[in-house]
Length: 146
Image (tube, one colour):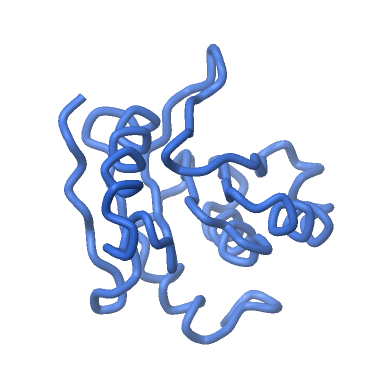
């Protein structure tokens, strides 16, 4: 069953993520927040999602559509480009990251991609994993060593 307002394609991608209860998940390029909300739902009553996007308009739409999820304190939106991502002081690292249609990670913007991969690797726990669309339905990207 697809969460409300989730396209079949997005539902397939979110459904393919190897999520486990209690995980901390980073979404890169969250747009209006549909995938972030669906991931939070899949995590059940545990876990957290940080969803980032470089666009102020996207973040505003995501916040506007996520009142109940934001009220739980388990979903946070942040306006920042992947290549500029730095976790807040004391913020725990994330177990898994994913990105859907993000040019810095799918090869459309290789220069930004090098920086984005470094920043994402720094935001993940050792052994953390990064998934992007474009596989069957996802593919895992190798992260640079810290």
